[in-house]
Length: 148
Image: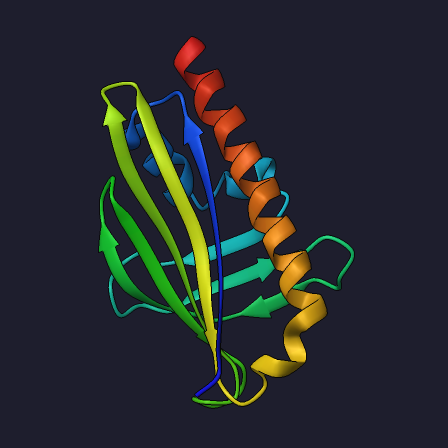
């Protein structure tokens, strides 16, 4: 099976609990997030979320991923599919690594697999740019909270 992987990383001057709080506050996420512009659902393993993403320069898209992993202050992972399993699957993840009490490394990525992965080349660059924009906005929000 064909796979493509995007991974971004950023260090944030805030504790993991603060970063986690922003990532899981679905009601307020669209107010600061340029990439995930809508998200709702019950945040629990096995539950389905409703997600709207806006990759830079591309049309917005809606997905209904299933939460695969949920470990507070550490990991959030979901799996989205286009139509049926194996056509185009995307396993999206956020991994938080506390560097000390006041600093966190965020690894944010997605593993794409399936028959249509080869047709994603233009979309992958926009998606990576969207991840980077989200990371920067998350960093700004978390660091602003730490100062107030």
